[in-house]
Length: 144
Image (cartoon, rainbow, N blue to C red; front, side):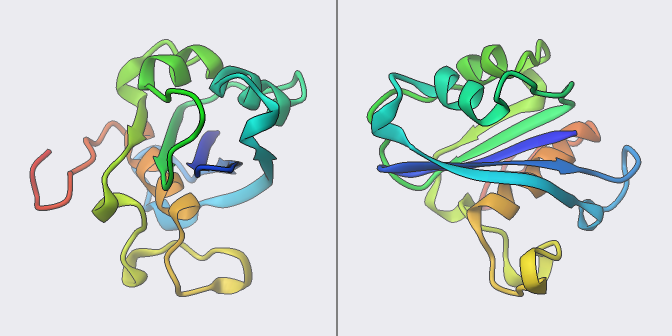
């Protein structure tokens, strides 16, 4: 199970995905549930994740958040790891790079309505699936 998210200035969208077998193509992602939460109603990332989980966050194998705006509170990988119960920080990523905010259209896993347009949420899910499989996530420009 993986958690993906898009954090903007005003809202945070979070989603739970089931991925195929470890090492499998991230195109095998299946969306279980998603929600968008207003940032100004919460003092930080942990309460937002708790609200999304509604007290029942399943055991996660990886998580990735993409910053598409400037939330009213800091977002760091260590905080995400603590909020999700993921002890292995190498399976948690927070991306704040404009070029990494969406996957290229040709690599976008089948999203709602089989959309070919990239979205930061599905891009984050794809990156989390790679983390889950133990692969490093290359940064834009080819550097890891």
